Length: 330
Ligand code: ASP
Image (cartoon, rainbow, N blue to C red; front, side):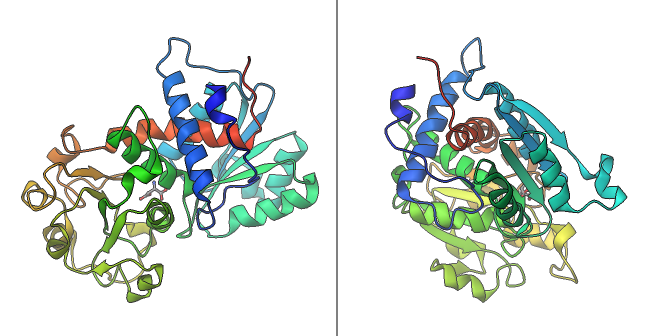
């Protein structure tokens, strides 16, 4: 396993966005994740790669998948993990976010995983940690506001590549594949991160949504925009559906959930207009019957949703390993 990983040298201390990720970094993340996916199939699914390191999960916003996936990834790498959630913390006593981060630093944390409802918080903590620790603490963005969710996009990339070639997953397998990101793009950090990674992989990427949730300003990403889903379907290889983020919607951005489903929801009828091998993805949590009909979600021949969740642990192990300067035994 080590041979595959040490081919390049990982330089990036913090993973806050994918906007400046290089092809080599994508490759290293995917190849390292592939090695860890193999580890996860063994009887002993733990490796001592981060033994003695401390990983802190600082989730200022609720999360099920991402938080548990990071925690499991840290444990599989034998790191010591500490968890923070605002409800049971000194934040309720007036402590600032930077003070919270400083407290975890003082306890000897090596890697901090940050989720916050406001964009920019992981960057602010990274700056503060650089100042305090002289570059010894790595920050991983686990989702900040509408800005970025790099590990979600990397796990989506990994799920797509392993679907296309499970023995040798590589980002360039997606070159020329037609991919639609459909739905609430305006509020989606997942979409914003996926745009960078899928463009870097050379995919034929299209954004689709109602005009209120896909403003024309998204044209600056240099990918086609569609306001009618049915026009965009022909030839599509992968459809990435997004959750309608009602908690982030102010005002009436949608007529009704039923109408949304009629116009933008994924159904068997619509899939018939795509490439015959089309597959559906969703980052979760799903609003069943809104973004896609329930039966599609559970149809293993059509959905890669379960593979996305499984990929999450391997991809997060890979990033923690690369950022933590992990060592594997000879
Ligand atoms: N779980 C993803 C996120 O944290 C997607 C979502 O919540 O809709 O952004």
